[in-house]
Length: 429
Image 1 (cartoon, rainbow, N blue to C red):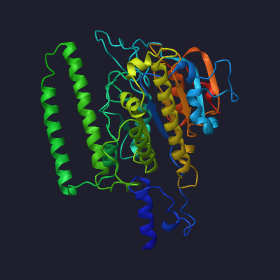
Image 2 (image 1 turned 90 degrees about the vertical axis):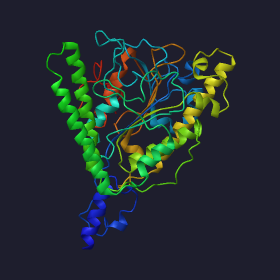
Image 3 (image 1 turned 30 degrees about the vertical axis):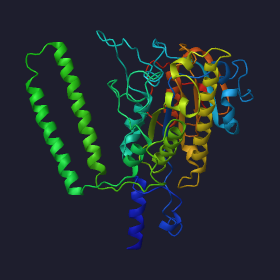
Image 4 (image 1 turned 30 degrees about the horizontal axis):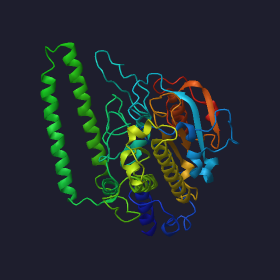
């Protein structure tokens, strides 16, 4: 009986119901020699910052390549982790046209006019390529985070960094408190009632689908295309309902810390979101996370003048350049804190969470209105990438080559992504 109880606890931990903490000894891994811990899964994290950086002080000198490069002012808060990240320079999305959209096409590289007759088009983002494979194992196929109270200056259309296989935007959890409650708050409704609610939703979907199919006769090609898109939306809802049913009777993970303050703003907001991101992947609630970070709220929280748009048009020697540098420093300090957390969090096999995560930090905008050489920082040991270098690629190398390299590095079965022309061999360890 004791052995069966332990095996049940091990299963629940593996599916995200319990935190994968060093409680292994207490649940029998030492007592039963055959119960070896499974290899930790791979995870992906993308953090987008909208308007970009201070080009003169964030990027290492392009002539100073390799591991011995001099760390520029904007990255100095990351000095202790210089060997744990790589700056990739020389990339670009060939279809980038919108100088105020740092997030919309960052993970897709799509052509805005790629769909005939439409003024806006997008394609699947790199995170969702991974989510299609990784998401079948976790409560949440992927998690999208954003700052609902912040303006969209520098980010562009979309509710998050994520876009589905049809190029449609995915919604986001918009605050640390909402994220915490989604991950760790217990469901108040009884299981039977929740099942009844899901059954009712399925019944409504079935009725809608029948009525929609009845409308197909006699439609124009344009209307048929619109209806096909509608059917896909229904199928997406069905997929989410199936996921909810799958995890309905599995308790949520235990909260690793107390509920965050709902009034967190800017820097403290990002810091808490980073803690929650680590908690989400540590507990295996998801293996794919994107975070569209706040701009104006960050500036105000660190005492920087101006708004994100004005600061992005910084004038050398002026107040806007000071604010831009303050923003860069804050981002680097926060990123160093995230790496601290990833390195100090232990997996079941004793390795660090950092060893099994691949993360990207950056924007589709370099600075001002420049779309070439966008800031691209890669870290984490999960993709087997060559870290600790200033990597300068051939000018206008597709940024999607970097995303494809990361995807393949974590084991995603992808031969291409967007307009990629291949992997970046110089980035592979």
